[in-house]
Structure formats: C-alpha cells, structure tokens
Image (cartoon, rainbow, N blue to C red; front, side, top):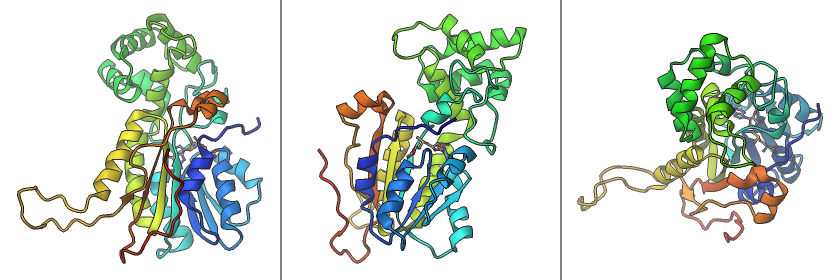
Amino acid sequence: MEYKHTPVMIQEAIDHLAIKRGGYYIDCTLGSGAYTEAISAKVGPEGKVVSFDLDEKAIENAKKKKLKNTIFINDNYRNIKKDVHEVLGKDILFDGIVFDLGLSSYQLDDDDRGFSFRSEGPLDMAFGPKSPRSTEEIVNKYSEKELKRIIAQYGEEKEAGKIARAIVKERAFEPITTASQLAQIIIKVKIQKSKKIHPATKTFQALRMETNDELPGLKKALSSAVDLLKDQGRLVLVSFHSLEDRIVKRFFKEKSLKCVCPPSLPVCACGKKQELELITKKPIEPSEREIKDNPRARSAKLRVAQKPDPHGLKNKNKTPKQK
Ligand SMILES: C[S@@+](CC[C@H](N)C(=O)[O-])C[C@H]1O[C@@H](n2cnc3c(N)ncnc32)[C@H](O)[C@@H]1O
C-alpha cells in the first residue's frame, strides 16, 4: 500500500520554522515525510534533520527518499530528549522543532488497523507497537464509567453516556474485536446529525487518544522540546483537536510569562525566567482553499513560539506576517 497523506499547512509550518541553511531541526511526526523533506532541502548537506515516528511504516517509507542529512528515530516523541542525546550527544541543541499531531491518512486508510470505521482488521488504534495499551482492551475491559469519561473528555462527544452503555451491553454477548463492529454499535445508538461526518468519529478519536496516551505524551514532549532549542530556536505545533490546542496554548502562555508574582508584590520575588516568546498571538488556520482541497485540514490550528535571545539582540528570524 502506497504511503498517501496530504500534509496540512506545510507552507505555513515551514515558513514559521524560519529554516537556516546548515541548521539543525527535529520533525517529531514524520508521517509521509513531506515536512521532513522540505526541511531537509532547506538546511542543505551541512544541516541535520532528526525525524520521529512511532509507526515503523512511516520510517520505512521515508528511508526510501534517501535524505542524506536526515536521521530517523522509530520511537514516541515523548522520548525526544533521551533519544536525541543518545544519537547526537548531550550538548546538541536545535534551531527548530515541529509537531504535526494526530494520525496520517495512510494510517486511517489501512484496513489492517483499527482506525477506519469499516476495518475488519483487529481493533488496534496504536500508532506503533510501543503503545501503552490496546484499543481492544479499553473497549472490552474498561468500566462503563471510564468509557463514558474518555469518550466525553477526549471525543467531546455529547452522547458519551449512551455510547458507553451500548458498548458494555454488546460486549456482554461477544467481545468487540473489529473497528467495523464498534462503528455499528455506535451507529445504532447515536443520532446522525451530519451526512458528511460519521457518527463514530468522536468516539474513535477518543479511543485513539486513550490508546496512545496522547495528551500526557504531548505535555512531556513540549517540555523536552524547550530544553532542546537554541536561543531564538522555533517551536511550531499543528494540532487538530481543541484539547491538544489548549495544552499548547497554555504551555506557551506559561513559558512566556516573565513573572508569576501576585500583583500586590512591589518587586518581583518569583525568580521566574521567560522561556518562550509567543510568535503567534492567535492560532493560524488553514486557508479556505486548503480546506476545500483537503477537508481533513478543517480543524487544524498552528501555533509558534521561540526561545528568547538572552542578550536581547534583535530577532533575526524572519517570520511571515500574520493575517
Ligand atoms: C499528521 S501525521 C504527520 C504528517 C507529516 N507532517 C507529513 O508531512 O506527512 C502524524 C504522524 O505522527 C505520528 N505520531 C503520532 N503520535 C506520535 C508520537 N507520540 N510519537 C511519534 N510519532 C507519533 C503518527 O504515527 C503519524 O505518522
């Protein structure tokens, strides 16, 4: 099966990385390799790209592109610091780090996995073999209360209670082992409001996020990414889910504060250091044209921050103007 994926907001992400020739960059989510390829071309032979993906099929596919300046790491991006230190040594710092979160169209279309509603393969929404738990275990072993919480929280699904109840009722007759079986259970109980969006979309998203422990992993990776950036190094995030975007927004805000003292204190006593400067005050969204060409882009939000220059020199990184 050919590795097909249309990258979202690639031009915006690459522009905001402000790539320097000879620079060092990390792509935390390799996918089809489109971002990595663009970075690799811009840094040239004297630069370096380190690309992560949990999915070995993404790594295998990207290796075929024979990018001489790129190192591939088949691991969870939550381990970036440890992995990068192991491969390039402890003193290494980067000019930019990018995350394009979620799953690729290739993964969604692969019927051997459980991401697609019609898949008859095992109910497996893991990005790779190192995922902390299996989707089948969540669906068949979690209590109704736990299922409801996950579906409501990660899927932002209003009918979470009804769906959790239906899953528990059905699994009492026979275990739920395929994605299509699960999708059918959801179709039976959920009101279909839109013809374009499958009724099981939010539940599947929630189960994928729980399977891969996505939000805690993102928090850990963001902290490590800040430690790995050079002064004026860029951090670019493309997210597709409001909870992911909220984590990024809060993280950027907290790291960009210069002081956290109560306003009543006459002088600063907290000793807080500003660790990031916000480059995008509001998230950048895809153009109408991109959404029309690639509907998957519709919920994307891109945020950018930069490590401050401790000498207060004028920022030489070029950033495209925000519309
Ligand atoms: C939306 S795709 C990235 C697309 C990519 N920017 C491109 O140019 O094609 C997200 C990729 O990130 C990978 N991924 C998701 N979570 C991950 C994690 N915690 N660690 C490593 N890779 C992850 C997925 O396997 C998937 O291949």
